[in-house]
Length: 67
Image (cartoon, rainbow, N blue to C red; front, side, top):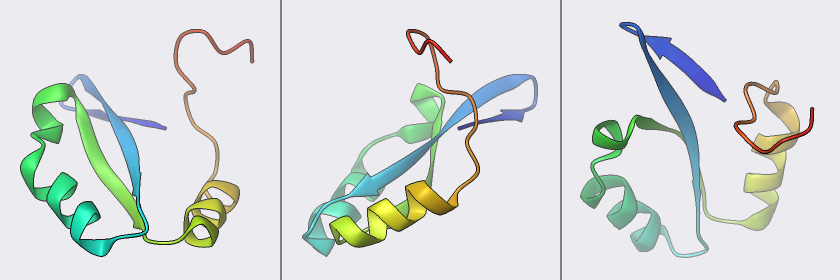
């Protein structure tokens, strides 16, 4: 999913790992905005990640997607 911010497009990211410390580390140590991304969701179980993906309205899917 992307979101327009100040004329630039920001990709929204779902961070998922079964270790909360890994999610926290990725969240705090990767300069997401520098890469045109923002962390919109986090999950620590596959079920949480699945539920977020299933219940979040689809947005832009990016290059290479046929639909």
